[in-house]
Image (cartoon, rainbow, N blue to C red; front, side, top):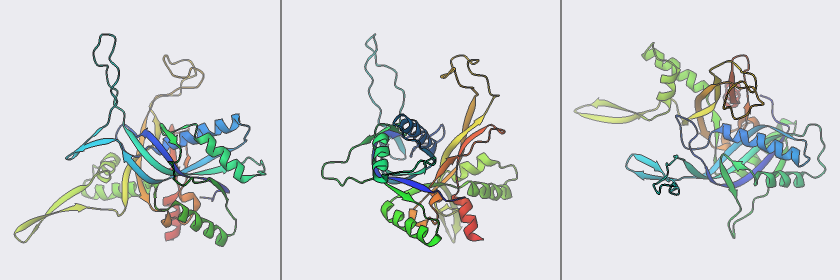
Length: 319
């Protein structure tokens, strides 16, 4: 709920072939867990470069997207690579991959860990250069096209005064338009569960999530004809999103589970967690932390998930 002290803005990054399969049940824009993984990898890169910095929160604004699919009627199929033939001369098995080209801006919350910055411009550029060496949601960062404007990264030192902070937020908003940012709407999922249970007492969270994740067409009798319409119980551009993992087993000691990828880290079996997100234009945000997603693990309950405070800020505004 508290505002960040420092933000790093990496504007207009061109990402090629990012992972469009964001979970077992969803596809499209990469999952926010992928961008959280980027921030963790960036912390390690910064440490190797001698920068003592952490990135506890990350936000993404999408300016353009181009899913690599072929559409025929209501069906879409991913563009797949043709693998080389195997040793027998037959076509090798295909592992389906979904790809998407993106133009995004990243908003990183910066924790300088009490290390003063002598040159903020140089720091911002150094971090941007490190990001260019990393995979962003499985995709690669592309340089600016010939003749295209090169957008420079910059730091925002969030002011303590509310009026100055509001001006800083408006300036950031202008820099990020046109575009849309993804926020978490756990509150709408809970509201929709209550609505569904009024119609069907046996409805559960999965029923509510599936109902919110699709377009629901309804027909009604009007005089002597039938009219079809799309039922919208909640306004806005709502999408299903993966937000993390939930434990399926106890936490095993490191090295006790065969074939685990890492034999030096405790291991447990997990399943995906899903919720509802909403795409919003940045001009609707009134706080910097509306953009930010952060790790909110519940080790006692075995949940490893991301959170976003937009809905909590919205409730404060209403009251």
